[in-house]
Length: 234
Length: 234
Image (tube, rainbow over all chains, first blue to last red):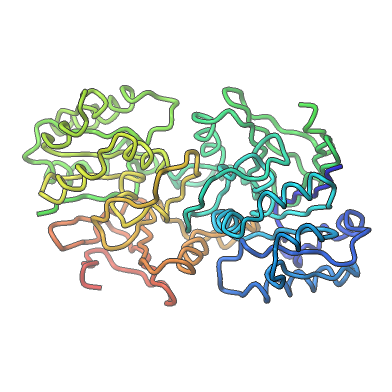
């Protein structure tokens, strides 16, 4: 049975890394002693090791060890043997490129579908949708494809942001961008605000956190989904 | 001699389409009786015809006719015969895809380098850089390549937006995104605020409008460039 936590963001304003969601993760990864971390989204500034250390420090507080996938000579084996997997945020174009380059996408899909518990935040959440085409990120690298893991039967827009009604900026709002996506694509899109996450257990996809999420269907008006909505039923 | 106007935006808050820049365009297109318009960036909502009509109405006020490239059976011939060319805004991924699909990129590059006056706004400006990789747009379609026209020896970020210091949103600022670009790419990036444009005459690239623009170089702190700066000299 698939078991995923798909978070809009790793960090809430004023909080520490993953802090707001640690109680949930403690339960989600209750059978995990060592978590496999995928740092591929990290576009420099800090190294994979340093990024992995940030994750280590967060999970140490719930007594889970963390090892980066880059520490293994064979990343495919690392995924196959993983007790649990976390893909962190950064740049989605880079993450997807590295997943293809390292030839791990298929294995990642397989093990998570077979029940290895998965956590994604931001870019690591984006890839759980059908494609990465509703990312907010800049195309800093050209990926071999926009296709992603398809654990969800729709796409995600993490860090969903409501329009600033006071703004005099003429660049597109997030909602406008998603509408543009829907002029060419039929895939529904969930705008997941910071502080929300999805809990996937088998076929059920429950919206968690205190906020509503915005649901976009082609040629329909977007609607607000209440927390605890099961997205597999809509 | 290359002659380009490269605008951050088509429209300023509270203004009409191209209104703020019409006096400049009247001079730029002084020898143009009919302008060729490229509506490829338009992701639906309105048709190419409707989009072209918006442009027609704006240019009618300075006595220039407008014809859409989609009205010609042979778009390559249309470009070769054009007195002046305008590529409008929309989605850069879509624009670049259509330019490749319609096989017009090479001809567009050639005629503009040979002196056909060009106007770009937003997505139509993005493509005047070396690549489209510093666009703000959502990847709603997978283009054959991110490479663009390279009229400028750098990349553009149109609709450049300063960070909102009051924001509690944890998504990346525009500056952070451009820094991410520079972890993988050496190409300089110009953040062009709404109301600014570049005037290219041969090798000279002058920043126009009343605002400063933000200049990003790999591994250096960004700097503010004053209006009238010649970017070919920095």
